[in-house]
Amino acid sequence: MQRDDSVYVGHMLDMSRKATEKVDGLRRLDYEKDENLRLALAHLVQMIGEAARRVSTGVREAHPEIPWADIVGMRSKIVHDYMNVDEDIVWEVVTGDLPALVSALENLAPRDV
Image (cartoon, rainbow, N blue to C red; front, side, top):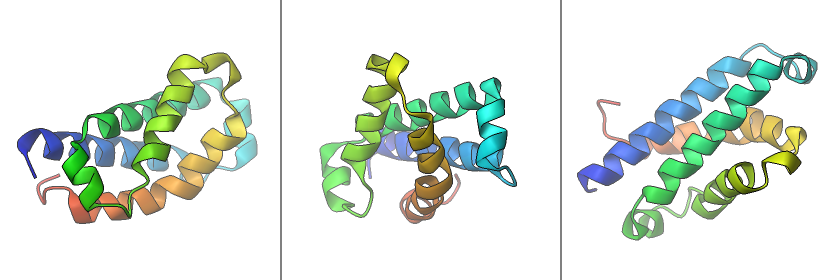
């Protein structure tokens, strides 16, 4: 993996961990009531998608276990259609999808991340 790829994969891992840590022990209602949390999670998901977008095609093709297109698509939704972001989907991504992504990225990221 090229240096740039490892930087972006590492960043995806860091931001995914941050997002999952922010919801640890919280319920959906807590998320709904906390505007700062909603904004932070949307931003973290956006950052994960931006980093994924920058990972080389070769690395993406070598690791089909990571849903690259979905991750980048979510970033595009948040950036370009920000007024119609579905909070239920953001919550589900962070609580349901990111823990598995963290595991996959831990296998892919450089060991010092």
